[in-house]
Image 1 (cartoon, rainbow, N blue to C red):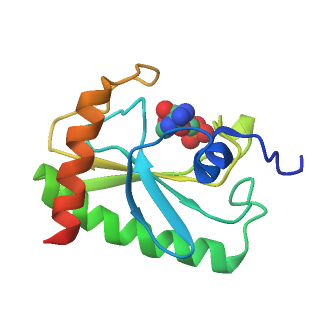
Image 2: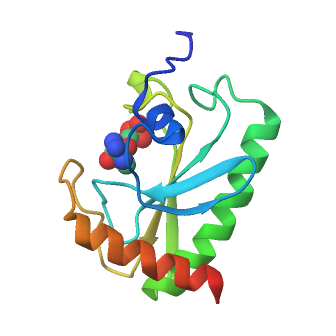
Length: 140
Ligand code: AMP
């Protein structure tokens, strides 16, 4: 497998070289808003440490990410009055991966509401407002 590229977008976000709308962080993981959300409240959870994707991740990285995914799934359900979540995770180009730092998508879901098509950048103000809703749910 191709080795980890330290200049991928999420590595830059982790270093603070690129902005992100963070909603949660702990010693092992960081969660922030996807800039092209396929549902309101679409989040990404990443490990702080290097992993290209699930194929080279350690068990510890996967466990830490899944703990954060579970915690934030409850938060987005509360924040957006969702009835469920879809969790997505892509590996390598053939598997649909576009950013090569391990990440999990959390997509709040409502009955009868399809995911939006990928590729549309959200208004920054909307991302800020949605992040605030999630932080409030985490605090509550
Ligand atoms: P994938 O690798 O297929 O899981 O897709 C990468 C995801 O990262 C997509 O959902 C993008 O919208 C998202 N994304 C790309 N650049 C950024 C960024 N600078 N901040 C937040 N999300 C991003």
